[in-house]
Structure formats: C-alpha cells, structure tokens
Amino acid sequence: MLDDETARFVPTGFSIDSRTISRGDLFIALAGEQVDGHRYVLEVFDKGACAALVVHKRLPFANDLGAHAGRLLFVENTACAMQQLAARVIAKWHRPVIAVTGSAGKTTIKDLTAEVMSVAGRVLKSHGNLNTSYGLPLTVSRMITDGAAPGDFDYAVLEMGMSSYGEIARLTDMAPPEVGIVSNVGTAHIEFFGSLKAIARAKAEMVAGVRSGGTAVLNADDPLVWEMRSLRDDLGIISFGIDAAADVTAGEIIVEDNLSATRFVLKTPHGSSEVKMQMIGRHNVYNALAAAAAGCCFGLSSEVIAQRLDRAVATKMRGELIRFHNGVSVIDDTYNSNPQALMLAVRAISGAKGFRRRIVVAGEMLELGELGPQLHRDCGSQIASLGIDRLIGVRGQAAQIVEGAIQNGMKQEQAIFFETPDEAAASLIEEAASGDLILVKGRAVRTERVIEALREEFKPRPLDGICSTTFATSCSIGNTRHECRC
Image 1: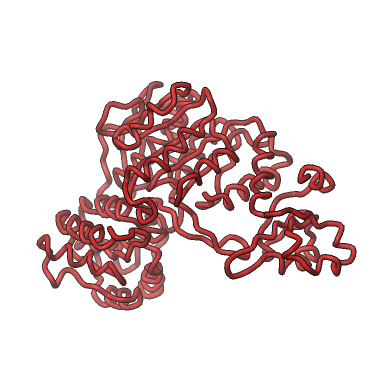
Image 2: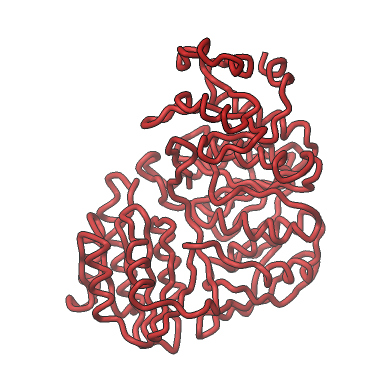
C-alpha cells in the first residue's frame, strides 16, 4: 500500500523537522515524548512539502486541510514506514554499503572510511552520529537530496549504534552491508546489558547482517570482537590491530610533542606507507586501521589510503585541539564519554611532552548501572597511575573518579570535585597558566560549558592542529529527541 501511495509523489527527500523542511520534501510526522510532528502538518504544506506521512488517529483534523488533504499518506506507524522507505531506496541502489559499529570510535571510523573511499567514487556517509533507526533513514534520504538520483553515489558509509538487542539487526536489514566493521567492545550502555559479553552479542549483529559473500572487518586486539570471526563461514575476514598479528597493522607509532599529529607506518596486504594524521593517540591509530581495512576490501593500495588519512580532519568536539592566546591548550572531547573513551583520551595526553601541566576535567558518565561507582573509581585510579598533574571531576559519580585517584596516590590538592561545570570552569580560569594542557571529557553533565567559558575568557588562536576522539551521545532530530547509540 505504501508503494502505491508514495508513487503519486516524487519527493526530493525525507524530513522529520518542520523547521528545516525543503520544498518538495516528504514530511514524516513522528510522535515524540514531548512533541508530536502531526501538529506541524499544515505548516510543512505551507512551506512546500509534497506530502506528509501520518497516522490517522493522530490527525483528527485531516478533513480540515482542504486542498492539502489529498497529500496525506496514512500509515499505522510513521517510524516503521520511514524505515521501510529507506530500505527500499537502498534495495534499488545496488551499490556497496560499509557499516560501522563499536563501543568507541564509530563516528571517527565512519569519517575516516568515507575519506578513504572518496578516492574510489562519490561517498554518502551518516551525518554526525545519526546511527539509529531514525537517523539512518535520514542519511539515506540524502541520496535524493545530494544527487540527482541514488545512483550518483558509489558507496555508502553508515554508522550503526545500539542500546538493546536487535537494534543493529534492524539497521542491517534496512541497509545490508557489503563490509561490516566492528571496532571494539566496551562498557558504554552496560546498564542495559549487564556484561561485556552481552554487549558483544549485540555488536555481533553486525557480522550476522553482512551480505553473503561480503567481508567482516574485525579488531584482532579485542578478544570479544575477534571471537566474531567464527560466526559466519560465508564471509571474508580482514583483521586490523597493533599488538596481535593482523592483515592491517601499524608500526613506529609516534605522537608529535605538540600534539598536532600522529605518525605511523601503515602495513596492509597491498603494501606499506607512512601516515601523518592530524589526530592524536593510539586509539586514533586503531580508528585509522579500521578505515584502511575497509579500503583494502576494495583493493585500494596502502599509498592511496595513507594519502587520504593524511587529509582527514577531526569532527568538532571529538578531541578538537584549541590553542589560546595565553599559551593554554585545550582538547575539547566533550561530545560524549564512557569509561573506555575517557581512558583512551587520558592515555593520549599522558605522554605529551613540552607542557607545564596535564589537566583532566572528567564529567559523570551515565548508563553504567550498578557498576557505575566502581567504574568511575577505576578510571580515577588509572588517571593517577598515568601521572596526570591535575584532576577535576564534575557532578554526581565523578566524585568517585576523584576518590579513586586519591586512593591510588594522587595528592588531595591535585584532585577536586565540583557539582557544576560552571564551578569547574571558574576554577580553571583562575588557575590555568601558559603551558597547561587541559583535556575536557564528557557531555551528559554539560562539560561543554567549560569549553565555552574558556573560549570566552582566553580567546582561541587560529587553529593550527586538530586531533580526534569519537564517541556517540544523544542528539535532537526534528521536532523530537532521540538517542544516538554507542
């Protein structure tokens, strides 16, 4: 029925946001907890929407729309209908889909993979971290809005997240990947699963969803990921890693003292090449290796892959390096946080040389369930062992980060807790001095306000270096609020 109905219209794209509707869009009225898109149907028609996908019982005034009434498409569930439309667009496309999942680094891997694959053709990629059953259809709609036809794209690189069993399976049903990447398994969302093995089972839905004859790209250094290689016997396996033997690996890893770049030798089945990435840390080398492995699936040489990795730049708030006029340097990694992500970022700065002090501002991490207090304490203990000079915890269970650091030998005057990000920002503004390096990590407790305050007080210099860490958080989509998954 949906096929017959939509055939009456030729939309230029999908939209679920009445504020940004474009002429010719198909408006999909989603019902959120706070706002119902059905309230905006008349508004989107006035703005030029070609049609609206609605649920009849949520639109009792349908007969009052006059001439617009003929442009209503009635379905039982608008979210499911949107997903069906996206699946049909992909099914008619006949081009390779590369899908990415993992507890940390998905968005960076997605961006790096898109950069690598751009040498082979035009690439559609997920916008930001729109990695849910709401976000993926919006990405697919860009096949229409960004090009004359879906065929104008040669590859799609899609991020797929989850917070429950079955979510990744639904996404791979919508967009079956030719190549499926699983980066790692960590404690993000462990509140909903209870154990790392349970999280791994949910992530393994990526391998289950790869097209027969396709390829799974797996992290050989993560035991829970590497176990997934035995799930299918009809797939190719390409491994990446640094410590274990792998198809795609890195040697001679060097982070430049000023944190402007990370150098390493990329080793692939198609040769070896030197890479100089504008991102810092061993974790970003892993992200680059995952992207390189995807490129290898399509026969790209190490030289071509290295050239594209050299060109890649970071996404805002994912380890963005900001240098201020007063000599203070800040790494803005406030996009999101979880224990694994926090410690990857801390390790990235722990060996940095040429700085007066290395300061960590760590916000409370959510969705950790009963394990939350202990996981926060464990992070604090590790931060102390890495020789960080100053620790500032912000809100709630971040007090346990401070507690764990002090228990492991950090002096009490080095570790402090604030209940609000504004208090933390005021303390930093008072004490920060030339040569200090400050890592600000977290989003759930609005630690980005610390960055905003430092920008206002210290004034950034022109950007001369970028680094990146990537972890998903919640985002606003259309007139409702949905969760982007890890």
